[in-house]
Image (cartoon, rainbow, N blue to C red; front, side, top):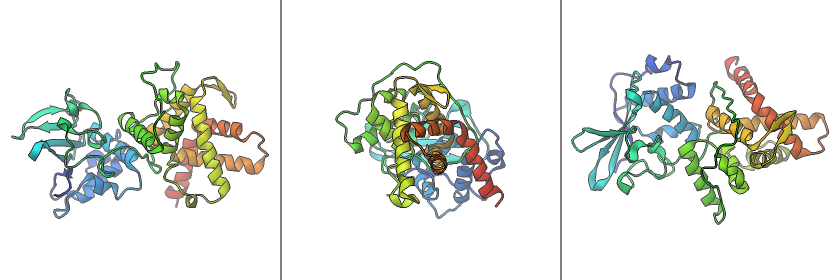
Length: 341
């Protein structure tokens, strides 16, 4: 059987719509994905799917899905769920030349006659925001033939390390939020822990505040966000760089779990503020990879100029300062590398 989750064909249109490309409300990453889809959607001999598109992107699944969701919520990408044999469902995507918000609807469920029976605005299983890449989404309790958790069309677990977005956020909470649920990792092995964190990310795309009560889960979350599980020694130039990266991961997780107030470079910081900063970077980049890369560089430069007595304390100060400055540095480096090349 051919792969499910295909795009509806378009004719005589090989270039991206000006409506999307010139839409000021649409991020560059979403415009890039729109253009990529448009470049393949007119090929009659190609069955265009989401997994096919992912193979042509350096971003990993969560960063890809961030742009994918933006196209849906901006009205440029519609998802149709149609009944198939044996209680299964067929998924089709429709890329629009102009945005059609349709009151916020971007997912449509059809009956066997093609009539729309509900949308993502309804109260059915299709009402969740990210059904088409949620690992556990399966209408009627049955896995569909297409967008299931198969590593391609499925979960939003592994986050990106290469997404670029010029919009920065600085979200901070005044008071610690209520603990809606606990975050105990007792009894979970590493793979089970990563899967649980991935499921949380796919639904909320943020580090939950309740993680701060579970150091093991927070550490696994930070490792996921910086691609720690994916990187090998070959990625690092020196052993010192590798060790610094590992220290950054440990220190950031520690900062996000500390119940007391800490002072970093004159700023009084709580775990809530740390988690808020983590989530603001995720909203902007889709991951912590670029943030971690910049922070490691800053620490190594400082270590080459001065003697650092308390390495972990100094690393935490560098991390906090990097939250406030890394975006400016990253955009400056990007501009020098690509704009003026």
